[in-house]
Image (tube, rainbow, N blue to C red; front, side):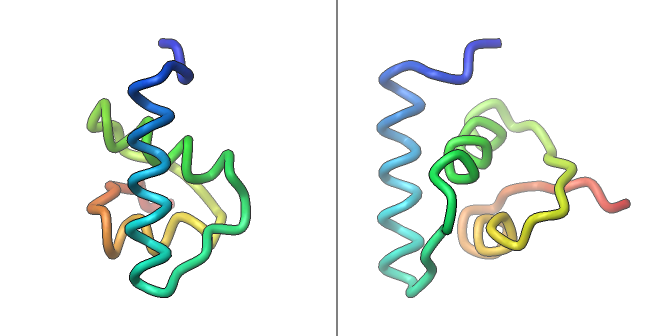
Length: 66
């Protein structure tokens, strides 16, 4: 599945801005893109990166527990 494209890029920006309004700064751009990809396609994410925790809390990102 392609991860790029204008639609996902714009969704990523909107998610980044929403998190910033909540006082959260995602440290790596790729993390917001990965999180947005998973949200867009309703895929759970297996991760070990604290940048995804606010996406779970504020955006409803689903994760897989290890």
